[in-house]
Length: 374
Ligand SMILES: Cc1ncc(COP(=O)(O)O)c(C=O)c1O
Image (cartoon, rainbow, N blue to C red):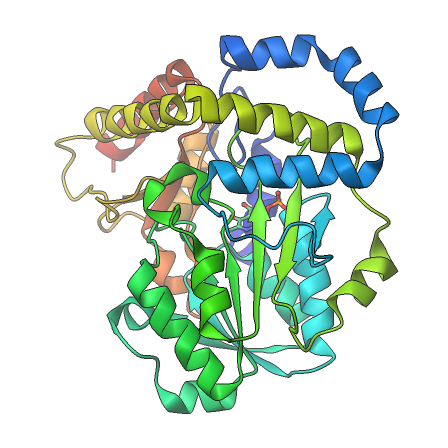
């Protein structure tokens, strides 16, 4: 068990990768819909078209299609401050390196996916936890804002699914403007929740604060890790983002960008509400198959994200994880989401919902069996 306590969430996810009952990582692994399958069938054509166009045109079209799909109409696409990366983690690394040149401390949402604190700490930044209840409850403490050069928020959050409302974002951005603190948002899960589809860029631009947003196409569609992380900044972020980007990347693949555009168009044509229904159905499936187990409940009743936390009562998440492994079933113990106090996740598992319903059904039966015997 001690060895397990030392490993990070991605290492847990790696252990699950080759299992047909991998409900660990939050990447999309459901079957392609019929219209998505037609796009994949058209890949040779997409390749030829992407190769024939100027890369910048392909990138602008993809970015407009994706951000437009999710209500982000005031995006600054075309203003040389939207940077396409291979993944949101690469975008995060670029942002972190740029921030480390100008600041030393970050107020980071707690809990959240652990590669965010790991990347920020990896470039030498100090982290101060910003509890979700504090973030959503009202103005941030002035002492916290005085102590940091950046406030970093994941919305919708992973693993809780909590969304920063428009009203809270406006107030937060105003506070960041007043304290000259960069406001950074990781919106990787926004596609799943229409409550995160208000125009964030309008709010951020109106606030006058320095801001950075990390967008991610990688959680929505089962494209075998073909995805884009976009790093978007205010006009004057006061950070050398463009320079650090050029230290690492020339650009993302036009083929992947063209694929993202086609998937975004398909989603706008009805695929997105279908996906929302699919995830909601899988959430009901998980809740129903574990219903009635003593001391087991779901701490995020309002979540629409493609992950669901299960509270295990007094059972240890690492012990349940090990017992599930004997059935070749993998879920995620939650300690490392609580990057400032891992013990808060000792009795919680996270289940990925972007999976075929049959896999979820089989895996949650195994979970029920394990929990019934403990
Ligand atoms: C909120 C959040 N941001 C970023 C990432 C990193 O995504 P990727 O592995 O595609 O870079 C994850 C991974 O699950 C995540 O949950």
